[in-house]
Amino acid sequence: MAGSHKAGAAGRREGGGSAAPQRRNKRSRARIAGVTGLSVVVLAVAGGGWIYFQLNGNIKTFDDGGISADRPAASTKGSNVLIIGSDTRSGDNAQYGHGKGDIGRSDTALLLHVYSDQKHAVAVSIPRDSLVDIPSCKLPNGSWTKEKHNVMFNSAFEVGETVQGNPACTQNTVEKLTGLRVDHTMIMDFAGFAKMTEAVGGVDVCVPGNVYQGDLNPKLGHRGSLIFAKGPQSVSGQKALDYVRIRHGIGDGSDIGRIQRQQAFIGSLIKKVKGKGLDPTTLLPLANAATKSMTVDSGL
Image 1 (spheres, rainbow, N blue to C red):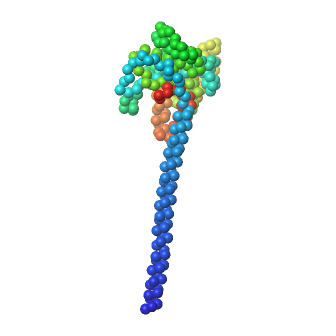
Image 2: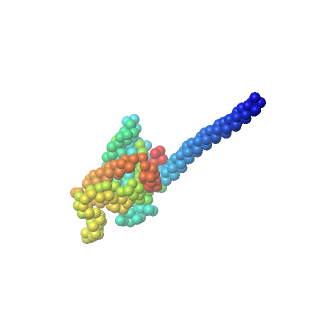
């Protein structure tokens, strides 16, 4: 009996001894899983914060002290964003554009209306050679110009003749022209546009006919080499910039024809981005390229 009792006690001790490490192992695994999960969350938040500060730090702002005090009333049915394409050749832009000149000029202007549902938008292009009235605009030295009448629209961006251009003057001009309040203004340069198209791996276009160097630069004096062959193709970088800027050799050779091609290009770019989905390997380089070459008002 005594022997049986001792054997039973030993068995109970052995069983108790094996259960304790199992419980400890389970608790250890739970702690490891918890710590690992927390670490992933912390890294994700930190990574998201780093990306935010990186992209936000890329963006430059312009002095919006030149925006007119006499403005149209704000709307509750969405917001209007003025997008200006600057053709300055300063900095990284020197390698693009096939020309010289540091002074910023508005090569393209679109007024984008974002509906209140934040899901839909519509854009209207403003031809650069449109004859408009330019209101009083602020110069770099703080003085203000006199109002001008019946002058070309793109001259508003040139007021003050600076590398940065004069986005506030262009915003004032658009508000006077349309009677709409421009809630925000953003400027994109050559380098930013080119790098955005590279970030998405090119944009699909269809060229209606062969295009030569002389079409891109009429001052060349001869036809030059072929730069775009007729038919569908993907363009990026310098070729994408050439495609949206060229006026002669495609369509009717007018600025209106070029605007239509630019709008179609933007649609194709958006389609390309949406087709790739929420792929950070595409979206982050795209956002990085865009923000590095973007200048916005301080409120955006």
